[in-house]
Length: 98
View 1 (cartoon, rainbow, N blue to C red):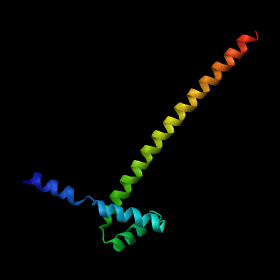
View 2 (view 1 turned 135 degrees about the horizontal axis):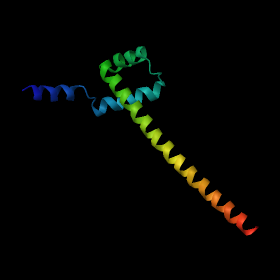
View 3 (view 1 turned 45 degrees about the vertical axis):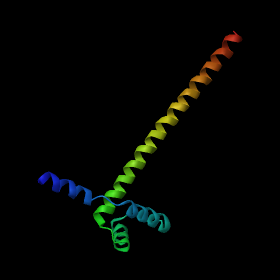
View 4 (view 1 turned 90 degrees about the vertical axis):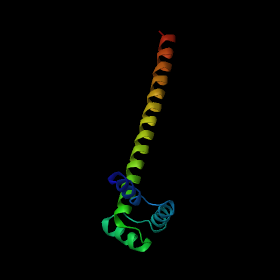
């Protein structure tokens, strides 16, 4: 019985897709800074519990950080590859004129 209540409790803390769309549109339209006060204002305006909005914002920030980090790592790898190619070209150039 407790397991069932735990599942329903977890489901109730998630936002519906329409609520997520509302939040994304509201944040985009109003260019809101993510402060506690502003999130409470958004909560009242959209009639979505403040705690759910905070969880969603934290999730989106973590997701954004992870994707930014992955892109950064890819960029570093690309720059490293370019650097190796340049070194290789210089080695060939030097060997021709020795």
